[in-house]
Length: 327
Ligand code: NAX
Image (cartoon, rainbow, N blue to C red):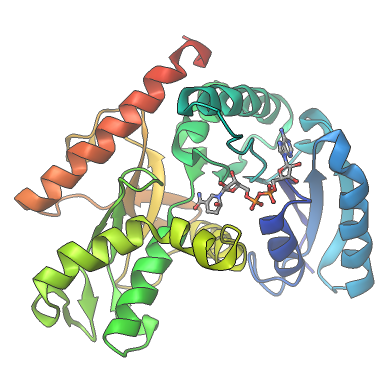
């Protein structure tokens, strides 16, 4: 049996975590031969609810579930963690300006970044889910000076999976048959779902779809899918978010499937002329626990226009919390 890996999860009593934790314990994220030690982190007011979740996890008697610990502070919560999944975030309250939301979350993620820097395993991999995810990842990463920015990422896999799922429904094919879909930019309604490099049954997608449908129906639908879910279900995505987190971490650790790439928000190295240092969703391939941005794809005028909008939004978000980024 392998040695257990330590997985720290914040917001562990929240809706997404309720769908996620049982699947991590069942081996869906790291493999059916990898025991896990869950380090669950919550705010003090939610510790009682978290205790109930821990009891249910125990009652499942998962063979891979090595042990569980509960934490109301990030220092002990991230101790020796190999993986840190940052889901807990401050939701937008009524009357709150976007800049207030950015600042409130920046404070949470700067404290967590410092704790990860000090107490996590030096080779830790960090996934930021809590919104605004890209900018929260920037804050956490900037507060962890001893770690490499390549150890941090933010979740745009849900948008990627939505882009695959909705296209496969439209074309009545299996999602498996669709490859090389890309989400560029921010996890927000400015994201750009790009099908210009996508393949279906081994052939380019664009000649197989109506351009009018792509531009006026498909792109806005993916961009606003989160809001559509809230409108229909009365709450934001939970099971699909958990699935996306599983897929993101699984591929980061175990590698991307052959002849495909996936979307991950990672620190820009200037690829595709995006400003360096912001977390931007790129097409990547993962191998041996590392990601590599896919370079050399051509962008047409439509793509360039979308790029500018989403990059601009990320630059504005960065400027709003700049005072919390250590120099
Ligand atoms: P919930 O409100 O159900 O749960 C959030 C949990 O986080 C709560 O239990 C709360 O007590 C806890 N929490 C708050 N601050 C904390 C802190 N400082 N330390 C530890 N725990 C803390 O939200 P849920 O539906 O689970 O969504 C969580 C976050 O994911 C939200 O910010 C949401 O916007 C974001 N999402 C991001 C997605 C992405 O693709 N990047 C998609 C799904 C989701 O919308």
